[in-house]
Image (cartoon, rainbow, N blue to C red):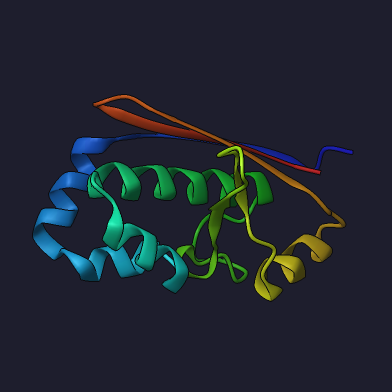
Length: 125
């Protein structure tokens, strides 16, 4: 049963401005420690940040909480990819707790971007 759907669209230029101003401090607000390692290897840091921010914002909408409420902190959410490149949220203890609170088990994530925008959609069931 579908528990929630969330979508987010962000202008990459907004992230570019914040990253230029705050650098790694900004990245640490959005990314988990695991993601920071991947981010440091990224050839497109703004794109990486934009896609991860959009994904985490979309998840917060699907959960019905918004960011920074009920344990939904961007740096506590982890995005990884399977062997085929499909993105997914890692089920950390924090995320498992949140999912249980709404009787949900699964999260589906899709991410897309262009030069100017990044978007993500999340379905929670």
